[in-house]
Amino acid sequence: MNPLSIKVACSNCNLRELCMPMGLKADELDKIEEIVAIRRKVKRGARLYSNGEKFTSLFAIRTGFFKTCITTEDGRNQVTGFQMAGEIIGLDGIVKEHHTCDAVALEDAEVCVMPFERIEELSREVAALQRHVHKIMSREIVREHGVMLLLGSMRAEERLAAFLLNLVQRLHARGFSQSELLLRMTREEIGSYLGLKLETVSRTFSKFVEEGIVEVKQRHVRIIDTEALKLIVNHNQQPC
Amino acid sequence: MNPLSIKVACSNCNLRELCMPMGLKADELDKIEEIVAIRRKVKRGARLYSNGEKFTSLFAIRTGFFKTCITTEDGRNQVTGFQMAGEIIGLDGIVKEHHTCDAVALEDAEVCVMPFERIEELSREVAALQRHVHKIMSREIVREHGVMLLLGSMRAEERLAAFLLNLVQRLHARGFSQSELLLRMTREEIGSYLGLKLETVSRTFSKFVEEGIVEVKQRHVRIIDTEALKLIVNHNQQPC
DNA sequence: CGATAGCTTGATAGAGGTCAACGGTTGTGG
DNA sequence: CCACAACCGTTGACCTCTATCAAGCTATCG
Image (cartoon, chains in turn purple, blue, orange, brown):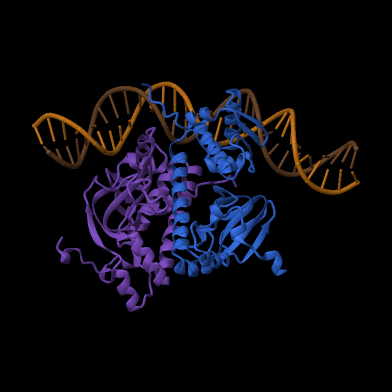
């Protein structure tokens, strides 16, 4: 607990465009840096938080990759999202002051812990931060609308194509390749997120490979034909 | 535009427990009443807002029933929710300052228009309001997690049972019957929400009728055996 | 190096989609 | 008040897509 090791500097963080509001004055920036209480490391497979746990903080992912999922008493399990560096996690806990899902690290990860009371306090003083918090929550709502569209109206190929495009797009925004990606999750987790069984995910990957749209070697995926993927997603073709 | 006709009094509104924070001091209450700028009537079939439209306000539903839905260029359509009196609508618009879905009245409706800038201003002064806004957004996120579970892991019967139980539960919280309801939406709209075709919705209703679980006469539904519906939702039965 | 978890592929079955016909309700205009 | 149209809902027959069950293969990790 060496204070030096937990001292953070959002202003120097290369993720600041992703998790902080832009256009702040210097004094506002100073205040906001105080939000991050500490950093926390989460080992692969470990939980950042669990269903039922008391909600105290939001988390900004600094490194690593998470899934969030809900599990019901009767054994159903649904992955509700995959989160990567720069994204904010934990919003589900606000309403009941307890978390309603699990957040599991899919690779060794580090998060910035942001006590929600402090966020609220500062939001009352810094309008730009307030607006930022509102936008983050609204963005999550809109993202989930997109997932509902996917789950409610797309076929397996369309779902997987949309999933891959979404992943590379987000990775690209973080400086990674537009065409190559390393899946951090299993076929089963992809399937849960997409409302498919793991066999269907696997078969659909194989189909894409046969068609020369992607190359797949276990969790390494190279997208050869992005346009084809986009066509598949929009392949709601009406005859003429 | 007679000021008398648009003057509102949240403190007298019988929906105040649903859309306002509790435990306010008198002066805070006075401030919050100023949020509601005007009321707006929306005819059945008309839109409260449309995809692409500039976002300015959130809306509290006073009377009536809405659906929200997204439509893509390629003709896909997904109902993302049904909203009733006391619920807040429009949160999708915050992130891009434009709405990303349509809100359509399924019966003649009236809403309280709450300019978002005013909400933000007052949230900075009244912590209870700030917390309330955060909870409303978080609640919507959690609700959508539930829909993802439904769409991703339930079969047709389970989806429809969960849908009916959710509707009556919300109606009951508003003083309506626990067992009788009038569907404001078509089979097609139910199907869109549940990720099913209208024929499947119809067939599933018929199945429930055969089994004596509900009575259905067009849009009038009477739930005869609530427990049976709950069992269906949790009917993830493992053999022993 | 063996064990375990994860992935692929095949065969088969079942749920829900699609297409089609018909019946019932609601609303409008003559 | 009736007739007609448009919309909505139901039901049947058939087909497609995805789930299920099963076997074998391949990384990964202790």
